[in-house]
Every structure is written in C-alpha cells, then in structure tokens.
Image (spheres, rainbow, N blue to C red):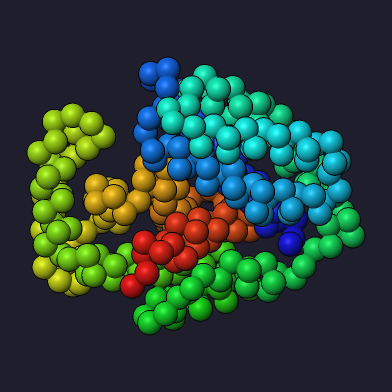
Length: 278
C-alpha cells in the first residue's frame, strides 16, 4: 500500500479515536451506551485487522507496534465488559493519541519511496473502489478516472454524487412515508440530540428526494432512523464539506491524502456497509 494511502488510514484512525473520546469525555462513571461500546470495538478490531499491518510495512519498530497492540487490546477487553469504567476508556484512548503522530504519521511521511514500496496511483484508487451498481456506477467510474488522472476536485464531486444516489435508493427501500414521518418525530423532540431540528420534510418519490432534500438534512434523518450513528454522521458531513470545497471557489486544496480519506469513509460507511445495500 502506498505512503499516501497509509497516511490517510492513520489519520482516519486518529480522527475516529478523537471522536470516540469526545463522546466519553464526560458523563457517568460507567458507560452503558451500546453504540459507544460497539464503536470502540470496531476501531480496535480495525487496528488489528488492517492498520497495524500497513504501518508495520514502513519499518516501524516492533516495540512501538507491541506497545500499541497492548493499548488496542485493552480497548477490546473493556468493550466486552458490562458497563466499563469511563475513566479506563479515557485513559487508554489518551495513551494512544498522546504520541500517535510522532510514532506513526511522521515516521511514515519520512520514509523514502524505496522503503515504502510505493504502488502506482492506479493501485491506490483500485483498492478503494467500493461495491457499486446501477446508476451510481457511472458516477463512480468517472470519479475514479478523475482521481487517477489527478483531477481531485472533480473526483470528490462525482464520488459524493454516487454516495447520495445510493442513499436515495436505500431511502426508497425503507419507505418515503417512514422517512417523512421521522422528520416530523424529530421536530417534536424537546430534548436530546434532535431537539434543535425544526423541519418537516415530506417526500413521496425519488424525484422529491432529489429536488427537495438537502444532503445535510438527509444525513440528519438517516441518523434519526438509526441507519447511521453520530460518528458516522460526522464523518459523512466531513465528506460533504470536502465535496463543497471541491465544487466552489476557495483556497482550501483537495490533496491526494484528502481524497483517499474521503473514499475510505464512503466505502466503509456507505457502499460496503450492509445497512446500505440497495
């Protein structure tokens, strides 16, 4: 795997840990919310399945890898407990994050091409090609061709179009009436995460979705329906922001690592997620 892709993977891991820590920074002594526990388990499992192997290929010391293995093993252990102590989770996550850049991201950036056995750009993007079908495949094919040619802004716009096409089709499968009713229920909530939601979005067809529902509103209602959790919502919102940065004039660059992280999130959260199979 190329240097850029590994750096994007490491940054994605760090971002996920930071999001998790923000959720457990305050609250009761014990954690009872299953979504938090599942998120922690997923992050730690991803470390052992993917990230540590990718990082190891860049010549990092065995002692460094072993140290982080112990920390992620502790997260897995805590995730199996009923009501794990919040302070134990916080301590372990902080231990991971405290020197994460120095131990992983900076050493990988400093490796030479010969050390990292850099693969071709085509290979980088092919590894991130998600499972697509139907109309969305035409968007994704163009998006990947743009990425391989170095047209990162155009790729981000087309890649997001493919993702929204998938979400629209899944909403049709769930039911437009159920989607609409959830927006009404969210508006009526006076406490909790959706207390500031003040919209009633009523759709009866795919055309209604395409013409009348903002992407940001669609993500909120999908969270209300339980199709995505808070962390996934935040990561998809970041992807949408990148799409907007790519589509409108501005000085914020869209680099290859940016786009690799963008597609990694779309692949894992939407396209290859069993929840969003059309």
